[in-house]
Image (cartoon, one colour):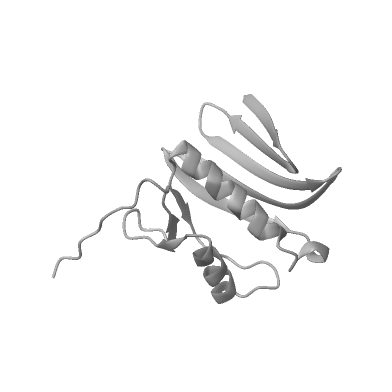
Length: 131
């Protein structure tokens, strides 16, 4: 497995590649403590949002938004679209999570069939609805 770690300020971007897929983790750290993290992975050249985690004591401080902003900047640099399902496992309800992701550029997906998609900044699909 190939692995690279990129440090950008308080962030670690960990890229892992194996013969089957690629995984990228984004960690916002304060010294050795992880404040928030997210993970995306590729499967057959489709990038999927795997998870976002912010510990209970670090919620409502903007750390999740910082991680998602870093993640979307990475996607834009790499010209990658990201597809997501929203599942609440914490204190936020799914409607609240859906609204939060939409504030970060996610929208309804009509291309791949996932509930939400975040398209790279230079690539915005132009869908036409047939009547």
